Amino acid sequence: MTTGAPPPHAPKRSRARTFLPLGVAAWLVLEIWLLTVVANAAGGLTVLLLLVGGAVLGATVVKRAGRRAFANLTDTFQQAQAAARSGTAPDPADRKGAGDRNGFLMLGGLLLMIPGLISDAAGLLLLVPQVRAALGRAAERAVERRMAAAPPGSLQDAFQQARIHRPDGKVVQGEVVRDDAPQGPYGPAGGQHPPLMP
Image (cartoon, rainbow, N blue to C red; front, side, top):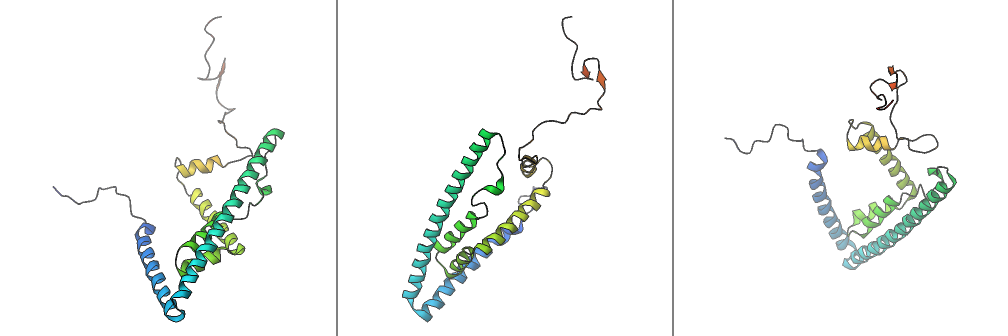
């Protein structure tokens, strides 16, 4: 009896799962080393002021991004209610703040709040609108590629099917009815039965 042998159909470990712990450990070591280098060059008080300033700026950015996201959500909800009353579909391009990339703005604020100079630099980069827009487009393309490669019947495939819209923006749900199906005396063969009583 052998113990320790993996089952024959064990899922293969992904690269991200393998290298993520190593990447986090290397990032932490680099952050600590950089903080000590700056502390030796400029003094401990300078490092403390940089860390406190980053935390305050990050909290401000996160608060602002949260307010903007709530305002966008409220505006979208009001547009959907108005569209439902008028019977038209809301145009996604008309949403106020559709291209703001609040998620990346909030991520930039969180990176600024994390103690460390590398995370502060990454957070400051995410405050630049052009960087957020480029990252947002790249993320959308990656999601689209992943959805297109999803096997039939998976959760990703179901999500992709739910996104299929008519040109006016309405989701079409239904079933296919073939006109070339063999017809019986009471409709499609096998579909309906004759009435029980004459």
